[in-house]
Length: 260
Image 1 (cartoon, rainbow, N blue to C red):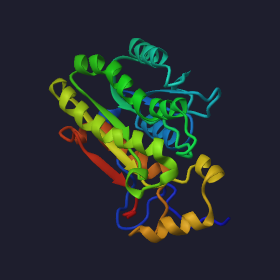
Image 2: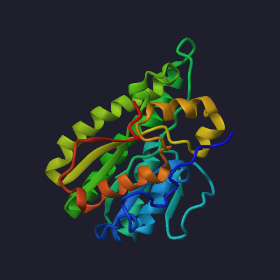
Image 3: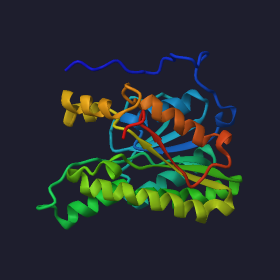
Image 4: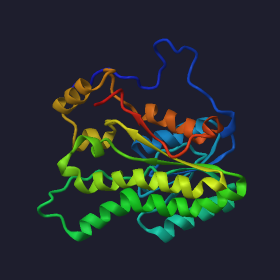
């Protein structure tokens, strides 16, 4: 299929002069789950370009990442392994100041045949790990004087996609997790926010789910007729990780070109 034109990272329109740089991110230790592909890989690249010390975990064996990025193969549903990776990054690079809970899987399922094990697996990869990663970074952030945790929710919560029942349920849980952790972690100077991307047509999405009809449907529902890209999402995450957003917490931000 032929893809419509979209902003692939080059700046156009009234805002001239390039995208923002954040001095507060230089040398800051950033931990990102699921950073080997899709939105996560772009978040890794953009934090690295800001001069941050970036660490990521993923189940991908040989990801294409900037050479300076700390990487370990890790299944985020294995909580002890995930928390050990966080502890090792803190020991090697310093206290983690930004956590991006990016890892997720949007598998489709039939509610008539879904098993308990399948349901639990979807909650583990899309919701549970975000809590236990946050639990693990809290003491590091508190000791460093504060930090930022960024979660992901999903438009499937709003768009009533029936085949995404387990995924959408987990992503709805991210709302509650974000707000309750913000209240709980706030006294330690830790901010907790969530980002809700639109339908970002990553390589995985294009391979498995996207058709010309779905592209037309998404664009028709947007007020700005451009596809949301990984870079669009990553730039908001940079802002939420930087000191520029120091008093922003317990919020959910949509990056979806006004998709209704």
